[in-house]
Image (tube, rainbow, N blue to C red; front, side, top):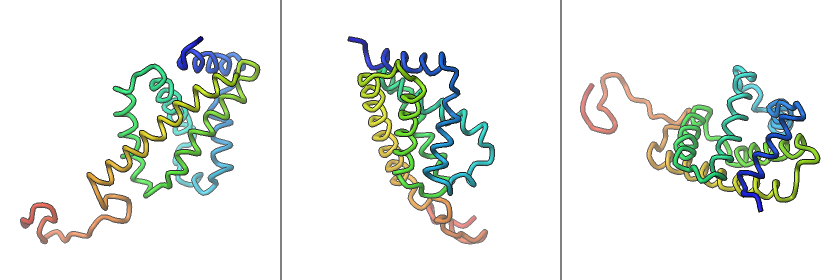
Length: 165
């Protein structure tokens, strides 16, 4: 029986052989599901490449047992996304599910129930890591979400250490 990583790689090879650039159908579905997000992308071309590649790499890395590099990437992603405000967790879940759906559609006949199950298993693991990272940042840096920073005057006491600037 092939490993999850092998099943996932076979489906990615099928997508490549079909000549499908996965980011295009993925972003079309993403914007159809979340049309209000389109305005938050300054450079959709660059973002679509990075988001698609990183999502695939993280799920495949988890399938290969490489959480040692996946976790820091997830933590960084969770932190940088804070600049967009408090994004609903369902958007992350939707992104991962849509990614897997697009892989299945583009892989065509090479897609199997086993490949679907492998991608879904590691998609669920990625979702759990994203939740863990978001909760960790919220504990470490409460209030540091866009629009929630306290206002501190230039001559006031520093809010953390209580001294004057």
